[in-house]
Image (cartoon, rainbow, N blue to C red):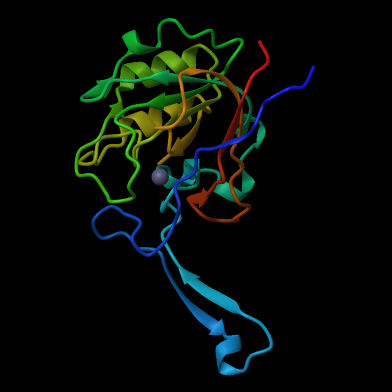
Length: 211
Ligand SMILES: [Zn+2]
């Protein structure tokens, strides 16, 4: 019997139009060496916030002295996960998470309003502190959203980030999930080994888990 388990890309495409928080550094690139100008090869130079596109936040993002993204444990970023439908507005509450078997799928990806474009929304669905605590207390290893942050855009206290950090729950943001059905998958979303930085891009992919 042949087995059809193709990988599904759930990463946002990244380019100069990718949205960032007001005041954050947009993704830019230029050509340091360019074969059109006689160079022997093409080499780009980039400038970017590490939070552009699909990325993982490190504890250092919200806590001085926290672990940098290049030094985090990789185990949360690969393995069984569940994609669930979140709310289209407001906050993800504990009630949205009740039916998850976190022992079987300790990674949770939340599909909210599922933007396909890369423009930066000024309002988006975020995670309530109660929901973050609920997941952390039950052994959740990773939470991922298809929005720019697990906290609301205007949040300065970043309470959901802190609640997840206290329980060692890894964070993925800016996933692209519009084309993914709710269900159980295998996730791979490894952050780059950027030592000393607060976040790093991931290439996030899913494939359906065997029944
Ligand atoms: Zn982030």
